[in-house]
Length: 413
Image (cartoon, rainbow, N blue to C red; front, side, top):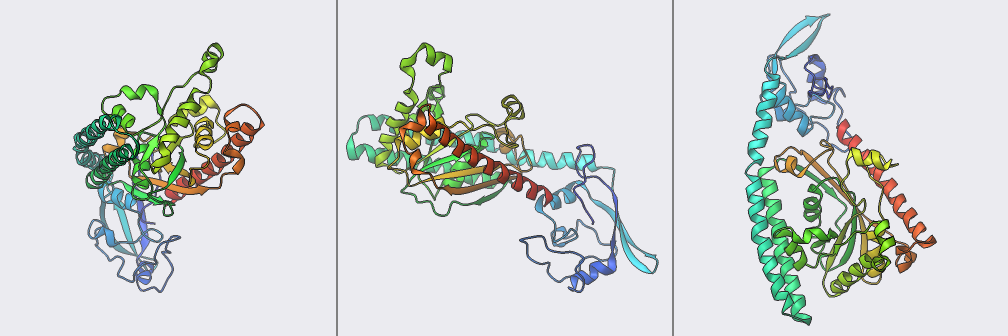
């Protein structure tokens, strides 16, 4: 093959000398030889003159197809930017004409630095624009919170819906900025059956702060504006905390088992907080999101937990149980969302806005929740809670297998 994903000490694609049988490549262009097969799910190669002696890969590189079924975007970009072809010639070897490519060793590192600098410069203006967008819509929502305090009944409902509309403008502007300044590709599937006037619970794995932007993006236009379970300390975060308070986000206080043993009156406080929030959601469309792992995935946390999953931490069932017990008759559906950053396992919000996350994969599926789990019993120690925990763990095993499949397919591509 002309190019491969072979690694060389973690520095990227390995420069190497490669040969292509000119006759066979020419035959492929005329559909006379299956030398280059289309990958699974991809269209067949168009009939064309694939290559000729003295050709330069940089010229019309997007029209060249040398790797089984065609070049993927990331690989094509890397070949064009990092691995320029020094030249090619035609030689007679055993009566067969062959095109020989020699990739330049010199300048590869410099070319890689130039491409990284271009990506950085493209994403750098995004940071102040995102902050300005947050300040604009966050302040308007925060001010709407004071209006909400002065209204009741139907008027209060209209104010809350109005603030949700403002929050969706924040999402729309974020998406516009991402699409304008970043080259990130979004691979999204499984959210077509949601309704904008419904009541949903979304459970998801948690890798990075990018997850929040990802969920807002994939749910916008399909489901009501999303609310997250937040730590109570975040209510004091400037603009963000106050805007979330105005939008009726549930703020949770976490107590350790030792604290609850010393203060038993605090037991069940989170359930009561969830019930209060859910009562407020009865009259307004809402999507409640819960990161079931309770914290962002890292390899250190994975090892500390001795997690039985390859790509996930152990799930915590408390938050999901609280919502199911509180909104038994209100929920239209429960959705399981899987988020993957296949080319950047340790993706951070900074690497994302600096254009270093090439692809985001988001998959959604509707879960069939057994009726027995819409009950307060799953929030208290006992056999019902153990069955509920087993159900969540089964979902997590399926999610882990799905992530492995997505990562593997992305790597092989």
